[in-house]
Image 1: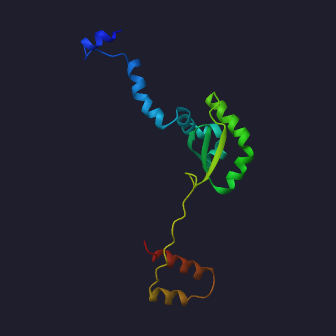
Image 2: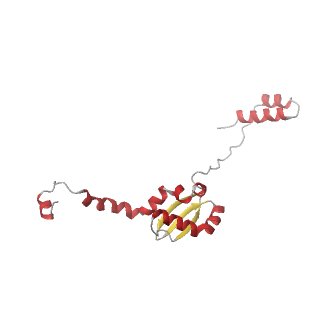
Image 3: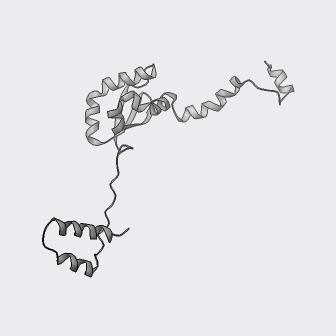
Length: 153
C-alpha cells in the first residue's frame, strides 16, 4: 500500500478502492439515508402486500418515517403503528424508525380520475333514426353506441 510520501511522488499510481469509497458515497448518503433507501426498495415485502398497495414511504429522517397514503388508510395505520414500527425495525436490523407521520396522497398504483369531456353532439340523421326505434333496451344501447362513436378526443 502506498504511503502518503509515495503517493505525492507518483500521482498516477493506483489507489486502493477502499480509499475512494468514502468520498464517493458520502454525498449520496447525505442526501438519502441508506436505511431509508433500503426501506423504499423493500416496502411491499416489509409492510405486506395489502398495505403496500395503498401506502408508500416518502422519507426517513431523524427517526420519523413519512408515509403517503389515502385518508381512510391513515386512521387504520395509526392503530397499527406500534406493530408496523417493530416490523420495519426488524427488517432493517436496528432501530431506525421511532414514529410514523402520515401525509395525504394518492398511492402510486391507484387509478387517477380523468376529466370527462362534454359529449359531442350526435349528427341529426343518426338521432332521427334512433328516435324512430321503439322504446327499450335496443334503443338505449344504440344511443349509447352513437355517443361513443361520435365522442370527442
